[in-house]
Structure formats: structure tokens, C-alpha cells
Image 1 (spheres, rainbow, N blue to C red):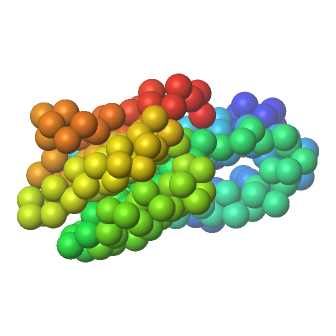
Image 2 (cartoon, one colour; image 1 turned 45 degrees about the vertical axis):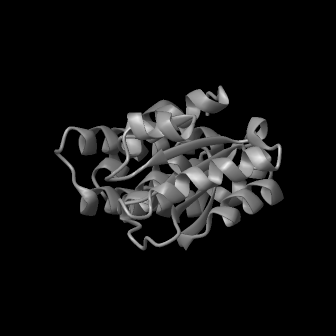
Amino acid sequence: MDAEKLYMELAGAVVDMDEKAAAELSQRVIEEKFDAYEAIDRGLARGMERAGALFEEEEYFVPELLLCSDAMNAGIDVLKPHLAQSGAPVKRRGVIGVIEGDTHDIGKNLVRIMLEAAGFEMIDLGRDVPPGVFVDRAVETGAELILISSLMTTTADGMAEVIRLLDERGLRGSHKVAVGGGPVSQAFADRIGADGYGRNAADAVRLCRRLVGATV
């Protein structure tokens, strides 16, 4: 089997939500001495991109997207130990979390999954995260991106506080801030001075690529 055909089958395993096939095909990548990073990028991640498109088209929903993610991760677990030998590029890094006062994290988890599939290194801060923690963790980890979500109108203004803290500490130029969630809109993002707004998980990937000028 040639490499490209194998990568296509890996993508198909992710779209088909088939963990076993994703792991077995990833093992075949190693046995055939193909490039582990290419298998993730052109196989597993490509499959997750297709799943994201199906999600946008409302052919897949949250349960299907999570199962696709499980299949992708099954393959990544096999390939990850071989990445060092494959010369994988340095990943662009971001922190992501749900703003203080909100514990709804399904949307945040989907965005993280999609960004990791697209090659970003994401540091998940979890739920109910104070504004200052977003800033502190971004500084500590050297993250270029700060991604904040909320599903409650009563907590969305905490996103503005993150940007205020960045301004106060003279850090605004070092971190791009993107926001998303049910009560959030492009108009809201513009009002608080965010760098972008993601309508859904697939849109968030496109936005983050644009914000960091990345081709990951």
C-alpha cells in the first residue's frame, strides 16, 4: 500500500468513527516506515476536518463528532511515540477555557478537539475560569492564543475583563483573543476588543489559523 492511500484510509476511519481501524492503520504506518507526522496531518486530521464539515452541514452532531475524535486519538496514541523521528514542526500554542461563572463546556471541548486535530497545542483550563487565570497561563506557557467561551449571558462580560487585564499589563500585543459561545456574536467580540469570534468549532480553526498566520 502506498502512503497516500493509507492516509486516505486513516481519514476514512476517523469519519467512520472506527477506533479499531484507526489504531490498526496507524500501526501499519509504523510498519511501512511512513512518516508519522504526515499520517496525522494528511490522515487523521484530514478525517477530523471532514467530520467538522459534516458537523457544520448538520449531518453529524455532537455525539458523532466526539466519536470521530476518539478514533483520531486512537490513531494518534499509536503514532505519537514516533513523531520525534519524523521531524514534526513546532506547534502553535493556545489556552482555552470557559469563563468564570459558567460550567457549560461541550462547545469548548469540541473547539479544543478540532484545534488539536488541526495541529495546535491546546492547554485546557477547564470550566469556571477567572479572567486572570487566562492571562497568567498564557504568559506562563507562551501561548499566542487565548480562547474563551461562555453559554451564559450573565458571564460573557468576563471575557472583556481578560482583554482589560492584558491591556493593563502591557501584554495585548503578545496574545490574540478569540471568543465564542451561545450569547456571543461578532458584534460582541468587536465591542470588547477581541481579535475574533468563532461561530462553531470548524470556524474556530479557520479563525485561529488566520490569527497566528499559521498553516498548521
